[in-house]
Length: 328
Image 1: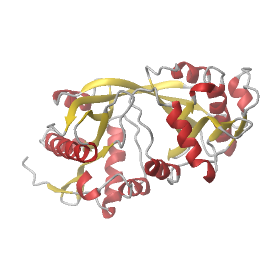
Image 2 (image 1 turned 60 degrees about the horizontal axis):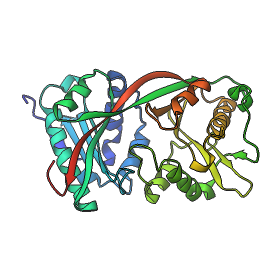
Image 3 (image 1 turned 120 degrees about the vertical axis):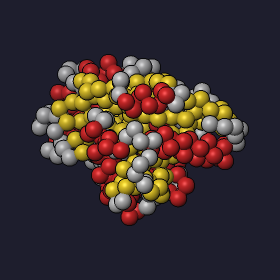
């Protein structure tokens, strides 16, 4: 590297520069992963992040040119694997100078150390996500022995003022004996348990950590006013659609799920339609988006297409197998 770059960690004083870089990368790499500085500040406060050890910042003077972050799942997934997730990026003007290689080496080392400390000897993987097909990002990770494990489809649907859940369902019946309502503070634990049940058999899914779930439930980006729950006569959560907002005039569905006992009843479509109608009724959004596993065992992509969602693009989830307690 000809330029004298300065390496440090990310602090709360850096969140504005961090947001500027993240949003520039979202445009340059076409991932649409946009964040406000306040959202990134919340990440630094996460119970599962030690900013002094789990984050990296690379500076050219007072210009942030690269960042990195490590997180480790607190439980094994359905296949018994522990996931250590690496996030980061390098400004396009500063690529091909060795920053990305050094950044990934440091992140991988920290991920193996952290996962080993949390879980001891365990089989798992280092994971990176968000690369478009054929992108330089995907090629870079492939050069480091990461392979595409899954593709995720970003889908979007325009919102029409005044449209109702019945409009969205276009004549499809709503299951009897079910009520739809927005979630409240007292629903946090019940929805977490429903989500754990709904995703227990999904690829890559691990039981949600209660602390991390609480942070997401109370995050500034959460939009409970347009989220919806489907509950039975006893109040048990059967399905849910949890929304957030990351971009102006766009709602995003972080989680949509149905507990196994209620699958095949049309309840997933119904709760999603209720959330779509709620977002349209606010007048605050022009579209609603979600990401879905392209190989979802529940055929979720087809469900979303029937409700008016169309594919924008796909991004990869890439993995590199690791035995934690060993070496990267």
